[in-house]
Length: 262
Image (cartoon, rainbow, N blue to C red; front, side, top):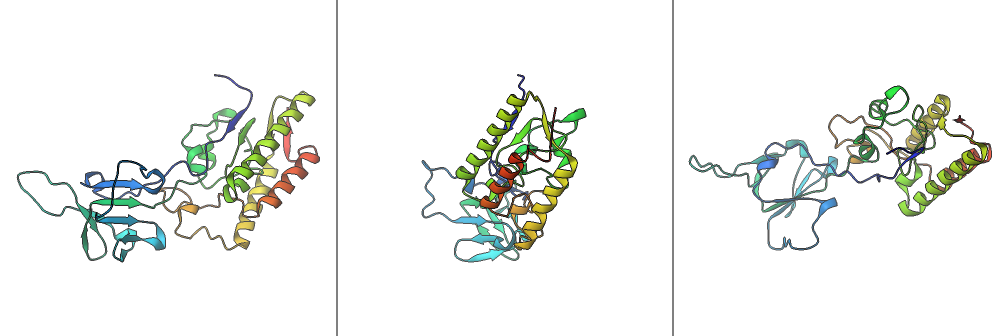
């Protein structure tokens, strides 16, 4: 299929993340992620259930047993030399706990994860995934230099990633629609931000996050700590929806300053 524009609306929290724990695939009980909890047909009442989180949450087993996730391995409870046994619990930093089910509260490959799972290519076949290997770079969280006519709804560096998602997504959609209408009236067929505009906005996003004590070294999925190989980076715009809307509106009023049209 061919189109003039590509507008991504893949959601910032659509890729849930499971930890890389040895033996997990052989666990005999049931496993769930909080983003994929079944609503029908599963009854956990009366069962021994472990809840595994990230960072300071660590591993939390019901009845107040806790340890750091880095010390967690799935263990094989009873060896049997005739019949292969499946793993039946978790080992924390000193104790084994037999479980019937494990619930993972281990977060998401947030905001950039859904986009990085698509092989998006820009000018000269440049890969968006490679461009963002050290963290996202955007202009207004809506476009990326070198990727003309690609718009990202609720993408990285966008206020929609840290506010009422539905209302802020509406702002994204309205702004993109207005931009496309401007292009149609002016006879433009291509739009992309300049490298300077992208660098300035990315720097502003990082400085705004730092001023609000959003530390990328926090052991949180919010900054990529739960995703192996992912760079710690700021993926949201922490300045608030009102400031973001004002900035986007000002850019549009000034003839879409920071963008190049063809």
